Image (cartoon, rainbow, N blue to C red):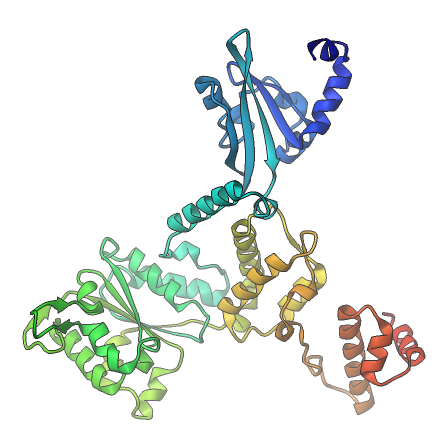
Length: 447
């Protein structure tokens, strides 16, 4: 074997190396780069001339080549986080006459989408990484996590910065999906209570018969054990009451007494417990309207709305859309273990023109699904749900004579069908016209 390799020219050996591995690097005993193939250089956005001779740690982030040289132990199928995604890498020490003279490293899988298809060993490794990502992902949000620079969003953020240090209760109103909990988290994080707990209760998610115990706790008469409710858990911290509009009137009265007396009385108990809690409340309906309808206590309303933040729906702050779109797209690309995915121009146009009744939450859900449905690293319109792709036939300016309006409707319908279905015979059948008529209309509208 040695004789065979010795007969190969340097150029032939270089060709073998360049084609045997997707990306690889060779370093000397001091962890300086001796060789790096062209593909790896292109990915790292460095030239081979500039890379060779440099310390490997200055060229490849999170490298472990130096550890392999020091330990003399190969590192096989090891997760390597680089440029926003996890890859799998092999790192092997190079030994000559019993002495370590350097190390060889190669990337064997360049993103996790291929990795997931492999052996149980690799799948287990990937799952361990994913668990680590989830364990370290924060469940709290800061003001910087709220995306948007529109006038409305800037004003809300400025208001939060002003009122957060106080203990004033805050009412956050906005449609479902506008991210009201993120705003509550940001208030807590900027407050003097940030070292305390942020405790949440969703009044709409807890059955009414269990809500009193959930909020105020319950004393077990037989054992004397007191189960603390969310109010007690939030002592010296912040209590976020989501969907407070769903709180029954009887519990509204008890909550009001708790806020006034700074004391909570648990179920089956006659003894009050002092609490020091800041209240943040959220509602997806107007509480003032519920007050008028006698469905919400007026005295509690005035108690919790010292400051009211009105979160605009996404359709009213579309100047923030591109920032939100790019932020969530990149987030889900990383979560999916993909290196790069782009939006087709038509897909971006459809997303931009949609009215987003589910607001930011709907946008996140649509993008997360689209990332997994992307074809050849491109999100096509076919990856979007039907309700997003469906156009309002009267979304154009409905002005002028009826004949002109009908032509616009016809044009929009044919254009949408052509985007979704390549088979023109099927389109003609769906429209109830002949293929020749369809071709005439295609020519007419320059499709």
